[in-house]
Length: 171
Image: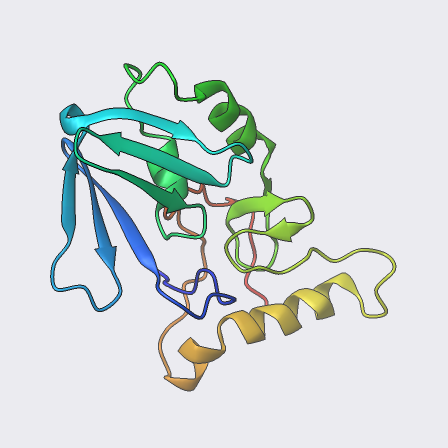
């Protein structure tokens, strides 16, 4: 699984992982993951701009940002008993995503990929679509290439995003 997400981030990165009865938060350089069970959470809802999820427990309240790895997986797996959670927004948002020809993940939103943070090729660009995709794939996979790690030739679902079955690796 790639951990190339959110290259723009320079500070703390939190990874959210689903568990059988809830989820865990693993903060960078954290000693151990914090475990949260769904039955210990009183309320879960989006912030006004839908970029954060606010989680309220009896003893504290905390915010998970959409730049956290696994956030999109989490919002798709919130149990239905949380009536303040906007399930319709999640469904509409996920269904609105388009496939990214660069990374192969269905994560293209508002003309930028959530995963690889690239914009799709368009006719105003000077290079051909294939050349543009090759250049961006070389950049996206540069670390794997430099470390001589194999790059998968098919996209796989990850962190709550589907894979594009028609994706092609050009490098």
